[in-house]
Amino acid sequence: DIQMTQSPSSLSASVGDRVTITCRASQGISNSLAWFQQKPGKAPKSLIYAASSLQSGVPSKFSGSGSGTDFTLTISSLQPEDFATYYCQQYNSYPQSFGQGTKLEIK
Amino acid sequence: EVQLVQSGAEVKKPGESLKISCKGSGYSFTNYWIGWVRQMPGKGLEWMGIIYPGDSDTRYSPSFQGQVTISADKSISTAYLQWSSLKASDTAMYYCARQCEGCSFDYWGQGTLVTVSS
Image (cartoon, rainbow over all chains, first blue to last red; front, top):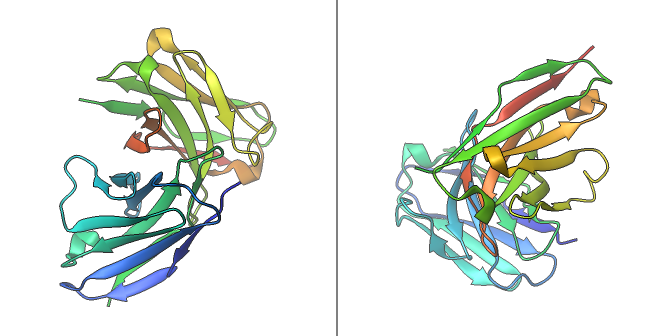
Protein backbone atom coordinates (compact mmCIF):
# COMPACT_ATOMS: atom_id res chain seq x y z
CA ASP A 1 0.00 0.00 0.00
CA ILE A 2 1.11 3.57 -0.68
CA GLN A 3 1.63 5.83 2.34
CA MET A 4 1.15 9.58 1.95
CA THR A 5 3.03 11.90 4.30
CA GLN A 6 2.25 15.59 4.54
CA SER A 7 4.42 18.29 6.08
CA PRO A 8 4.04 20.26 8.12
CA SER A 9 1.15 18.87 10.19
CA SER A 10 0.23 22.41 11.19
CA LEU A 11 1.19 25.82 9.95
CA SER A 12 0.59 29.36 11.22
CA ALA A 13 0.46 32.18 8.71
CA SER A 14 -0.87 35.70 8.33
CA VAL A 15 -3.42 37.16 5.94
CA GLY A 16 -1.59 38.03 2.73
CA ASP A 17 1.12 35.39 3.17
CA ARG A 18 2.05 32.70 0.67
CA VAL A 19 2.35 29.16 2.04
CA THR A 20 3.47 25.79 0.71
CA ILE A 21 2.42 22.35 1.90
CA THR A 22 4.35 19.24 0.91
CA CYS A 23 3.06 15.73 0.28
CA ARG A 24 5.34 12.73 -0.23
CA ALA A 25 4.30 9.30 -1.51
CA SER A 26 6.07 6.14 -0.33
CA GLN A 27 6.40 5.05 -3.97
CA GLY A 28 5.96 6.71 -7.33
CA ILE A 29 2.40 7.68 -8.26
CA SER A 30 3.05 9.56 -11.52
CA ASN A 31 0.81 12.66 -11.29
CA SER A 32 -2.19 10.88 -9.70
CA LEU A 33 -2.38 13.29 -6.79
CA ALA A 34 -5.27 15.42 -5.58
CA TRP A 35 -5.62 18.14 -2.94
CA PHE A 36 -8.68 18.85 -0.81
CA GLN A 37 -9.67 21.63 1.58
CA GLN A 38 -11.84 20.96 4.61
CA LYS A 39 -13.33 23.51 6.97
CA PRO A 40 -14.70 22.56 10.41
CA GLY A 41 -18.05 20.80 10.20
CA LYS A 42 -18.02 20.72 6.40
CA ALA A 43 -17.41 18.12 3.73
CA PRO A 44 -14.06 18.24 1.95
CA LYS A 45 -13.84 20.39 -1.16
CA SER A 46 -11.84 19.29 -4.19
CA LEU A 47 -9.15 21.80 -5.19
CA ILE A 48 -6.61 20.15 -7.50
CA TYR A 49 -6.37 16.93 -9.51
CA ALA A 50 -3.59 15.41 -11.60
CA ALA A 51 -1.11 17.18 -9.29
CA SER A 52 -1.50 20.60 -10.91
CA SER A 53 -4.94 20.99 -12.53
CA LEU A 54 -7.50 23.20 -10.80
CA GLN A 55 -11.00 21.87 -10.29
CA SER A 56 -13.67 24.02 -11.90
CA GLY A 57 -14.38 27.15 -9.89
CA VAL A 58 -11.24 26.99 -7.74
CA PRO A 59 -9.36 30.32 -7.72
CA SER A 60 -5.91 30.52 -9.27
CA LYS A 61 -4.39 31.45 -5.91
CA PHE A 62 -4.19 27.68 -5.40
CA SER A 63 -1.51 25.87 -7.37
CA GLY A 64 -0.02 22.40 -7.30
CA SER A 65 3.12 20.84 -8.64
CA GLY A 66 5.13 17.65 -8.58
CA SER A 67 5.33 14.20 -10.04
CA GLY A 68 6.53 10.81 -8.92
CA THR A 69 6.84 10.96 -5.14
CA ASP A 70 7.06 14.65 -4.19
CA PHE A 71 4.25 17.17 -4.50
CA THR A 72 3.42 20.65 -3.26
CA LEU A 73 0.32 22.78 -2.78
CA THR A 74 0.94 26.53 -2.74
CA ILE A 75 -1.63 29.08 -1.64
CA SER A 76 -0.85 32.70 -2.40
CA SER A 77 -2.21 35.85 -0.77
CA LEU A 78 -3.94 34.07 2.11
CA GLN A 79 -7.40 35.30 2.99
CA PRO A 80 -9.42 34.46 6.13
CA GLU A 81 -11.49 31.89 4.21
CA ASP A 82 -8.35 29.92 3.31
CA PHE A 83 -7.63 28.90 6.88
CA ALA A 84 -8.65 25.25 6.94
CA THR A 85 -7.19 21.74 6.87
CA TYR A 86 -5.68 20.49 3.62
CA TYR A 87 -5.31 16.87 2.54
CA CYS A 88 -3.48 15.21 -0.32
CA GLN A 89 -4.69 11.93 -1.82
CA GLN A 90 -3.14 9.45 -4.23
CA TYR A 91 -5.42 7.69 -6.70
CA ASN A 92 -2.73 5.90 -8.69
CA SER A 93 -3.45 2.49 -7.20
CA TYR A 94 -5.76 0.70 -4.79
CA PRO A 95 -6.16 1.15 -1.95
CA GLN A 96 -6.23 4.88 -2.54
CA SER A 97 -4.91 6.86 0.44
CA PHE A 98 -4.89 10.29 2.05
CA GLY A 99 -2.17 12.20 3.81
CA GLN A 100 -2.73 12.93 7.49
CA GLY A 101 -3.68 16.55 6.84
CA THR A 102 -2.13 19.99 7.35
CA LYS A 103 -4.00 22.46 9.53
CA LEU A 104 -3.46 26.03 8.36
CA GLU A 105 -4.11 28.50 11.17
CA ILE A 106 -4.12 32.27 11.42
CA LYS A 107 -1.06 33.73 13.15
CA GLU B 1 -26.10 20.21 -11.34
CA VAL B 2 -24.18 17.26 -9.91
CA GLN B 3 -25.32 16.36 -6.40
CA LEU B 4 -24.60 13.56 -3.95
CA VAL B 5 -27.18 13.51 -1.15
CA GLN B 6 -26.52 11.27 1.82
CA SER B 7 -28.98 9.83 4.31
CA GLY B 8 -29.41 11.40 7.72
CA ALA B 9 -27.57 10.96 11.00
CA GLU B 10 -27.92 7.65 12.80
CA VAL B 11 -27.65 6.66 16.47
CA LYS B 12 -27.20 2.94 17.00
CA LYS B 13 -26.22 0.48 19.71
CA PRO B 14 -23.21 -1.85 19.49
CA GLY B 15 -24.08 -5.02 17.62
CA GLU B 16 -26.84 -3.42 15.53
CA SER B 17 -26.79 -3.33 11.75
CA LEU B 18 -26.90 -0.21 9.60
CA LYS B 19 -27.06 0.80 5.94
CA ILE B 20 -26.45 4.41 4.91
CA SER B 21 -27.01 5.78 1.44
CA CYS B 22 -25.66 8.23 -1.12
CA LYS B 23 -27.96 9.27 -3.98
CA GLY B 24 -26.43 10.78 -7.10
CA SER B 25 -28.19 13.15 -9.47
CA GLY B 26 -27.33 15.48 -12.33
CA TYR B 27 -25.01 13.02 -14.10
CA SER B 28 -24.86 9.47 -15.47
CA PHE B 29 -24.63 7.47 -12.23
CA THR B 30 -23.34 4.32 -13.94
CA ASN B 31 -20.34 6.07 -15.52
CA TYR B 32 -18.60 7.21 -12.33
CA TRP B 33 -17.17 5.46 -9.29
CA ILE B 34 -18.59 6.26 -5.84
CA GLY B 35 -16.10 6.14 -2.98
CA TRP B 36 -16.62 6.14 0.79
CA VAL B 37 -14.41 8.04 3.22
CA ARG B 38 -14.40 7.83 7.03
CA GLN B 39 -13.54 10.69 9.35
CA MET B 40 -13.40 9.80 13.04
CA PRO B 41 -13.96 12.65 15.52
CA GLY B 42 -11.09 15.11 15.34
CA LYS B 43 -9.15 12.94 12.90
CA GLY B 44 -8.20 12.88 9.22
CA LEU B 45 -9.75 11.34 6.13
CA GLU B 46 -9.54 7.57 5.57
CA TRP B 47 -10.26 5.91 2.22
CA MET B 48 -12.59 2.94 2.80
CA GLY B 49 -13.50 1.64 -0.62
CA ILE B 50 -15.15 2.37 -3.94
CA ILE B 51 -17.76 0.94 -6.29
CA TYR B 52 -18.49 1.31 -9.99
CA PRO B 53 -22.29 1.19 -10.23
CA GLY B 54 -22.15 0.29 -13.91
CA ASP B 55 -20.93 -3.24 -13.19
CA SER B 56 -20.69 -3.27 -9.34
CA ASP B 57 -16.89 -3.63 -9.44
CA THR B 58 -15.89 -2.93 -5.83
CA ARG B 59 -12.52 -2.34 -4.16
CA TYR B 60 -11.85 -2.12 -0.43
CA SER B 61 -9.05 -0.83 1.74
CA PRO B 62 -7.55 -3.77 3.68
CA SER B 63 -8.38 -1.80 6.84
CA PHE B 64 -12.10 -2.02 6.03
CA GLN B 65 -12.35 -5.30 4.07
CA GLY B 66 -14.72 -7.61 5.93
CA GLN B 67 -15.84 -4.80 8.24
CA VAL B 68 -18.24 -3.06 5.86
CA THR B 69 -20.04 -3.80 2.60
CA ILE B 70 -20.31 -1.34 -0.28
CA SER B 71 -23.10 -1.79 -2.79
CA ALA B 72 -25.12 0.17 -5.33
CA ASP B 73 -28.54 0.11 -6.94
CA LYS B 74 -28.14 1.75 -10.33
CA SER B 75 -31.90 1.73 -10.93
CA ILE B 76 -32.26 4.43 -8.26
CA SER B 77 -28.78 5.98 -8.59
CA THR B 78 -27.88 5.15 -5.01
CA ALA B 79 -24.77 3.72 -3.38
CA TYR B 80 -24.71 2.17 0.08
CA LEU B 81 -22.35 1.52 2.95
CA GLN B 82 -23.44 -1.09 5.43
CA TRP B 83 -22.41 -2.75 8.66
CA SER B 84 -23.72 -6.05 10.01
CA SER B 85 -22.57 -5.51 13.59
CA LEU B 86 -21.58 -2.00 14.66
CA LYS B 87 -18.90 -1.22 17.21
CA ALA B 88 -18.36 1.92 19.24
CA SER B 89 -15.22 2.51 17.14
CA ASP B 90 -17.45 2.92 14.04
CA THR B 91 -18.57 6.28 15.43
CA ALA B 92 -17.56 8.73 12.72
CA MET B 93 -18.66 10.96 9.86
CA TYR B 94 -18.91 9.07 6.57
CA TYR B 95 -18.66 10.82 3.22
CA CYS B 96 -19.37 9.57 -0.26
CA ALA B 97 -17.64 11.14 -3.25
CA ARG B 98 -17.72 10.78 -7.03
CA GLN B 99 -14.70 9.76 -9.05
CA CYS B 100 -14.26 9.20 -12.79
CA GLU B 101 -11.97 6.46 -14.11
CA GLY B 102 -8.37 7.55 -13.59
CA CYS B 103 -9.48 10.76 -11.88
CA SER B 104 -9.71 12.04 -8.33
CA PHE B 105 -12.83 12.73 -6.28
CA ASP B 106 -14.61 15.80 -7.60
CA TYR B 107 -18.02 16.01 -5.91
CA TRP B 108 -18.72 15.08 -2.30
CA GLY B 109 -21.84 14.28 -0.30
CA GLN B 110 -22.66 16.30 2.80
CA GLY B 111 -21.72 13.45 5.13
CA THR B 112 -23.62 11.07 7.41
CA LEU B 113 -22.81 11.07 11.12
CA VAL B 114 -22.97 7.61 12.66
CA THR B 115 -22.93 7.39 16.45
CA VAL B 116 -22.62 3.99 18.10
CA SER B 117 -23.20 4.01 21.83
CA SER B 118 -24.78 1.78 24.42
